[in-house]
Amino acid sequence: MASRRQMKPSPYRQTPQPLQRRLGVLDSTAIGLGSMLGAGVFVVFAPAAALAGPLLAAAVALAGVIAYCNAVASAQLAAVYPASGGSYVYGRNRLGEWPGFIAGWGFVTGKSASCAAMALTFGHYAAPEFATPLAVAAVAVLTGVNLLGITRTALLTRILLGAVLTTLAFVAAAALLGPHPAADGAAGAATAGGGWGVLPASGLMFFAFAGYARIATLGEEVKDPARTIPRAIFAALAAAFIIYLGLALLLARHLQDGQLAGSTAPLLDAVAGSRLSAGAPLVQAGAAAACLGALLALITGVGRTTMAMAREGDLPAPLARVGGTHPVPFLAELAVAAAVILLLLTTNVLTVVGFSSFGVLVYYAVTNAAAFTLAERPGHAPRWLNAVGFLGCLLLAVTLPPASVLGMAAVLAAGAAGRVLALRRRRLRKAAA
Image 1: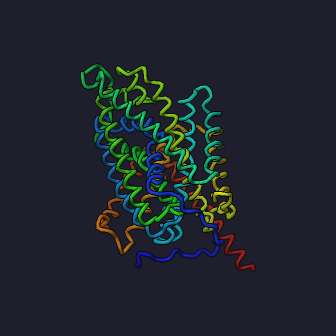
Image 2: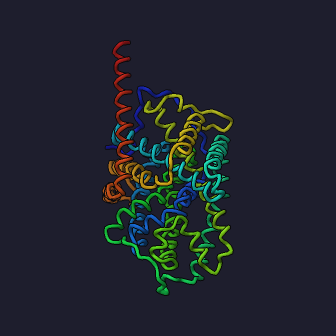
């Protein structure tokens, strides 16, 4: 199979208005890293520690290995298909329409829920008594930023990322200075995690690593994508892996296992119990900035995937419209914002980490399968690495908490049923014409 097969034309596809290539390596890396260092870094360690116990660092390492396999596959495919949509586009062109649809639908639905979770987390850190109104306002304001163009999105992402990195450096300093009750043998509840708990814990940690997908979904807005996208993906992933592994080791040393597993804000607890406890408000502010940065990048990526699916007839055609002084898929962005706000007003979204992880792991399973079909590949991307990534994604997906697996499986099935009905209606209209 040719590695640079032309993108298949769709019978439902209208000639789209192209987006503009404005992002370089720095902006692309910032968007990817900003997505990975979002709300996840402030909340995901607790449920992962409850499952993995003292093997939390091993869970982070396993999630990082699978993420690296996925990053290699994403970089390979983005260089061949530098268009918005990420694995939705890759799956359609390498594997067929159905694998592409499953990848795109899993990404759009799972990440829309993640948007709501991050918005609400921002509200809880900023002003808990007004969490939902603040979350809705954050979605509205950040959608407005996105509508001003991708360069404004990248600029705000860099600013927020700087605030987050400063906060994480402060947390690391607090954990290093101690005191360290876990290391000193202070009494505390032990977790029952460990052993096989590493697998579901790795699946939850994958939620925090998945941000580099935003770089690939913005492929149509990246300068020199064959060079820029792989560099940005690997730079963002390497930085995130070092930060996550370091934090896992520090938190395990500084907090009791039971305290870490039961915490709703483990990084805040790490500072509150240290010699730098006066800096707790800085952590709250940094967490709010992290949520905003991840939410901004997520809305951008989900909007671009929605646009790509609409271009191919898998979502309503108007969602593919691009317009404005700085061309953006404005209807797709507004539709995503409306869906997220609806979730905020009707649903408790603080439990969607596993739900989102399952959808994204399915998305990356398709990515690895698509990359496996490429004949031409760089030396750092052997075919067996794609196979490891594919099997690793499926393994982590099926070992997630059952509620997450069943919930996302039902959403994927509903999307597939809807597509079957839409295709049947199109065939009937064509036959009647």
